[in-house]
Image 1: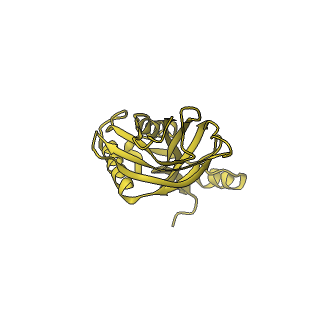
Image 2: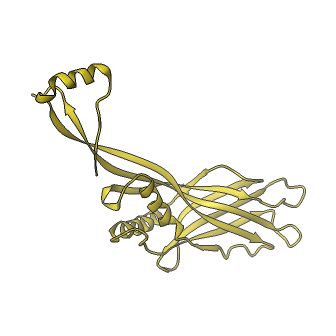
Image 3: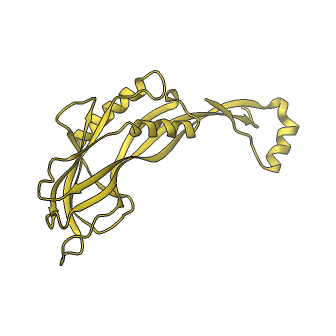
Length: 216
């Protein structure tokens, strides 16, 4: 993609008018980085201590979010230099329900797993330990694991190699609670809706044409 980048400012414009015949158009390449979140939503409902089965979310919106990032910035896959995940975050949307007294908040630990095109078992991409929850939150970063990021990088490579937009592998995220304290019960369940979010870094190259007012 090539765009024309005008030189602004009265002095430069005067020089441009006077000496245009001696100017040369130069093409300049700029690397531009777009950062955004791609999120998937999990609904947690736990009524007893059997909370280790995990919650799966087949998430087409992950790659749809990448397509939207491209469209909003007037890009195609051919313009992309690289796509990478720079962090994994959680964001509580609703809940959690109140814990049994005397506790005022829940203490939770767990992992986020990932599989591509039905591959099993899931590979852990992030983990969290002793997170205190009592209500909705902003984006909070959690620890990432290289093995899970590698699986996701392979999926992104498949997405970039696809011919057109809206073509991508199936990606499934798994929420696995390893501990909830105090333990949820039928009378005091742990119910919460939250987003697991990947912080994406999309780098692309733009070409601009500028006037060289002082050609060598």
